[in-house]
Amino acid sequence: MTKFTDLALGPKILKAVEEAGYETPTPIQAGAIPPALEGRDVLGIAQTGTGKTASFTLPMIHMLARGRARARMPRSLVLCPTRELAAQVAENFDTYSKNVKLTKALLIGGVSFKEQDQLIDRGVDVLIATPGRLLDHFERGKLLLTGVQVMVVDEADRMLDMGFIPDIERIFSLTPFTRQTLFFSATMAPEIERITNTFLSNPVRIEVARQATASETIAQEVVMTKTARGEKGAREKRAILRGVIEREGEKMTNGIVFCNRKVDVDIVAKSLKKYGFDAAPIHGDLDQSQRTRTLDQFRDGGLKILVASDVAARGLDIPSVSHVFNYDVPTHSEDYVHRIGRTGRAGRDGKAVMICAPSDEKLLDAIEKLIDKAIPRADAPEVQLDDKPQRGRRKKDDEGSDEGESRGRGRGRRRKDEAKAEEIVEATNENAAPAEAEAEVASEPAEARSDKDNTRGGRGRRGGRGGNDDRGGNKVVGMGDHMPSFIAKSFEERKAG
Ligand code: AMP
Image 1: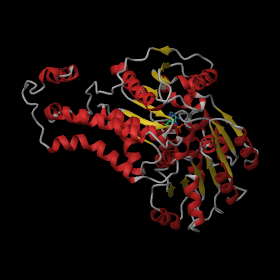
Image 2 (image 1 turned 120 degrees about the horizontal axis):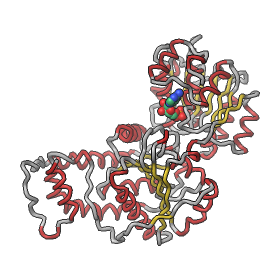
Image 3 (image 1 turned 180 degrees about the horizontal axis):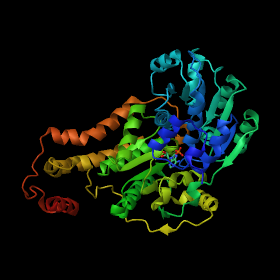
Image 4 (image 1 turned 90 degrees about the vertical axis):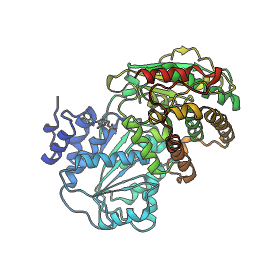
């Protein structure tokens, strides 16, 4: 088996790879690095999780180690469909170029033009960008692409989904035709094939197995709803979602809930939060710092449930997710494969539960055809559609000294909040736009703010009131006869601990 040391990478890069803990290249790396180092064009058919990012960053760092950047003329360019993916690529560059001197700039939405301009003005070796933002800079006359020696297109199939192909073609045409191109896509749609035929020169084609379809470690199930559409249907789905999450119990260490529409991402996250689940949304309308913070929290285990759209989640490297919940049946069958591929990674067990309304059965059929197997039907959990809160999970952050306060005073308030949340939720459930179109939309501060408030609110509020009556096994006071069983339960557990 090939080792990294068998590849013709410079010693400083090999050292960084070793320090990152890698000894053996993945198949896409073993296939792509040697021809890339020889200056050949590469067509890599591989998806996230295969190690594809290092398969282009490593040879690029090697090649860029010689020579110097000139003002406003980046020497290489990496195009990514989403900000998160671009940020991840930038992280890869940081990891593997730590022993060599390399300058880079990240051109993504949500970051100020001024800062980015300053970097470009000084000259960068690597420019990592989303296509729209790159063209914005170009059109402002701040950027010349005639010095690009290596150009990478990452996740081309997602670029296609998001309507970026004309931008990509334009960017190709702005770079010298003598450039080297490293082109990656998970699938080869006819349009992608056309682009590669037009812009790649005699590429070496490397195809690696689609990891998600091959993964047998993911247990899949579908839960059918009764109501097709409308408000009632949405309420039923949210209640079922809570039920299925609850049903997984402790087996669920963390999970991603996927929604088709970004408006639902917010609604579902809000609803889960109001019902005491530790959940936060991620989609293209949240500002960059908010998205980064949420993701970091999720990666570090400080957030249990991430509610996401396909675009926002695409390409994110989150190593261990125990569960994926499909709040909606994805409209593109392939997205199902991507979504469930978030769990059961690297041989771990994972579980994927999908909620399917009667009106979505056609989409479900298409998925089953694609994956060539029937997804087992599971019973729907019993749900109450009056949306009365049923359980009292609290965020980890809320545990501890302020527990008594949240239990005592918090209860009534929480009920009210929950009822209100559902109102908000219903009210916002209009004008839904497909999540696919969201990648480069402007940030929406109000939304980010409201989410921030939500993340911090519980803790601040309770802490602020000095809730500290969890000392010495106090009896629960003031609950009356109607204390829900979960409150007693959590109290007992905590006392024991
Ligand atoms: P990617 O497909 O580029 O998103 O990479 C997926 C994950 O694989 C990342 O967490 C990488 O750090 C990791 N990775 C990259 N190269 C290797 C390697 N040679 N061996 C093991 N893991 C790797």
